Length: 331
Ligand SMILES: Cc1ncc(COP(=O)(O)O)c(C=O)c1O
Image (cartoon, rainbow, N blue to C red; front, side, top):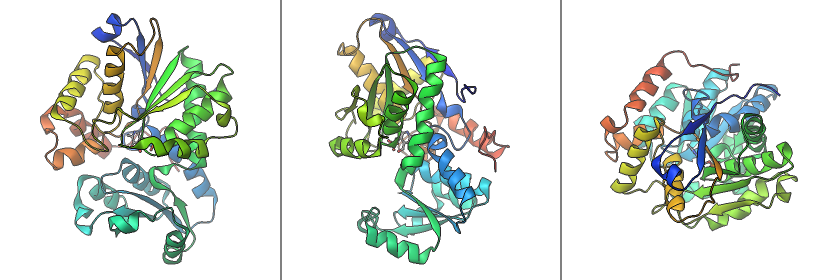
């Protein structure tokens, strides 16, 4: 068994004592300064394929503040692969926090309006893009393809060598990460853990089919997972000032930074589920920290968060400017 790539960290909180649960965080946010969290896992085999294949470059899709776009641009720069980002939004976003970095790392942004972006899975639209960008390797939004599932699945193999646990929680956007965890659980362990996905967007029930579609054949046998769809706090990227204050307080309590779009919603879900008596006594929980702290930059820029509440971002930026510690992704 190779050494786990990320540590598992026990955290304390008065509510964990009150409800008699133990909580550990799988610190995938520490995997890499820029390609952090689930991005690292999802891109691992995609990059291998890209490097082995005879492609002209790589193309992917995302919103103008997307963590995936940000990580993908950096990974392609490292591997010296020309890359295109098909971005939902107008060209004036080109200088926002996320895209300014992506462009600095060499990504060419192809902006499309929302209506066009909705066609991102349509064969006709993909054919049009293939004509424009011939022999480019296409990776879907969020990086969620079968190669990503294989990368995420490795988290379970690592976890099994690090601890015994009952329940694993992850935030869910496109569903790729959850599908990877479910698939990995069946490969790694004959005893199925309970795997809970916290949907961070509204009306996410449709994702259940997407997740089932992405599962490996073994993953399709797993019957101890669930997508919780009512803990999104108003929709994708939406949160109240109370939500933010609770996340900041939790960050201060644990010394780990969770942000309000993905991992912070998982934290609020955890706290709310605890208060509802959702977990049984002595239940051993693991939270997957999926990274994505770069997203704070955009929210601060838009005035949605106060920079002084998130000093880690400045530190992260400084570190990113220094030499990245690459943990195996270096070409
Ligand atoms: C930081 C972060 N966490 C979690 C997710 C959700 O992952 P998935 O899209 O695989 O459900 C994403 C991306 O979508 C993300 O950027």
